Amino acid sequence: MPVLPIFNKTALKFIMDVSDSRISTAELQRLAKKKRGEKPFWEFYDECWKKWLDHKESEIESEELPNGDDAESDDDDQDPNADSGVTRYWVYSPGKGGEFWDKFHSEGIMAIGWDYLGDLRQYSTKEMVAQAMRDHDNDQDGSKKNNANSCFAFGHQMRPGDVVFAKIGMNKIVGKGIITSDYEFIPTRNSFKHVRKVKWQAKGNWPLSNDNRIPLKTITEMTRYQDVVQHLLELVAGEINVKDEKVDYDEKGDGVQYWWLNANPKIWNFSSTPIGSRQTYTSHNAAGNKRRVYQHFTQVRPGDIVLGYVSTPLKQITAMCRVSKALHDSAEGEVIEFEKTEQFSEPIPLKRLQSIKQLEQCEPLINNQGSLFKIKPDEFEIIRSIIDEENSESNSGLVLFPKYSKDDLLRDTGYDSEKIEGWLRTIERKKQVVFFGPPGTGKTFIAERLARNIVSETDGFYDSIQFHPSYSYEEFMQGIRPDSDEKGNLQFELKSGRFMEFCAKARARTGPCVLIIDELNRANLSRVFGELICDPIYGLVVKH
Image (cartoon, rainbow, N blue to C red; front, side):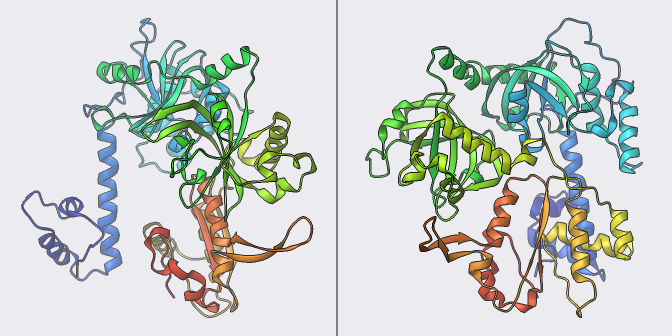
């Protein structure tokens, strides 16, 4: 049996310090077995895992730029281009995974975090920024180089007139703009208090090849990499600016239109597509027949707003989109194209909308059989107000879970640091852990404190479920359950269980989300979990 089955050949060669390309995976596993010796498996595994992760992190740093060089050195505190009059080019990440791109684009700004640093103008060198970060994190051995460089560039080196490309990761550009203001620190903002105003000129989704990939860190100057800059400029040139196109329609007096689009979760789902991604929808079904109310497809215009509704079994509005292209021919046939602009952390159930008197004539609420429905402006305003009410926290900016540090965890539980670190490593590696023991020994208490530490200062959350002998698959996953309609008539609908609700809520977050199952042994696990026990797509392992 392999000693380290999770690692591929490349990882094993690095971990075992082998350079011979002819060595087989089986030979590498034998070397691993010999290297392990008498060590416990978990201890040896953690050593190997840490070595590989450290290697990958250093590899990312060394690949900051296409030619392997770093754009800035630690000594580069003086800005040689400050008054040169040369247009400078930057790449910028609007939050992890581009999560705040739509918000910043609509506000006409670019902003970064690290709010605890205060006004960046108080730091005259990058090392001063890095030291402030080390002091805040209580990590005097940390480099903080990339984050410090990003903050220093944002506060000191960027200038009005510079060109900025908004990016996601290393392989995707989502926007281009021109910086129009000096740096500001705005303490009244909820988060992302370091701000510059930007005139965003283009918005889209442009993937990059490996030959043109860009740095991973938040902000990097690209001016001296002219080949890459030219490629980025050509990439976004001539792209439709949805916002400008919407204004053109308003000037003609036609106004923006509002639509409701149904998605069958068996085929695709608004919730599973990232913000900023573009999707097409055909005007004809698979049989080649025009969809119900085909005329609606011919009336769709760029800039129109689309409410994304997921049909049975969820039956809820989960997202909002903006039309980027009207009906046009494609390889799939006639399609409309739209871009996802919002994901609601609290979806709006269909039944709630149907209970509102002012919406009783709303087309998709009267008869939801079809795909694309038109919504009147006043109906949209009512639905939008409900969405804002239910998602007020997420719309007011990033809401972080209160800080719960490792010191807090050690103090509250009374366990030593080694034990806590072991549990956290296990959870990080296996994504689950089972606590067992006699009643009243603090299993639930410890689980909740670990969960609080894991989601601390992120937009994640934790939830808990208590099993009991009659707990069923229908309650946990989904199932047909009785309910009554607005007239009191009994009806049976497919409804999501606690696990599906947890997943739907977690899908809208970027931070870790933890589900605690209490009294696991009291339920019939094969009946409750069903296919979760053996189906790898859910990523859940059940042990007892």
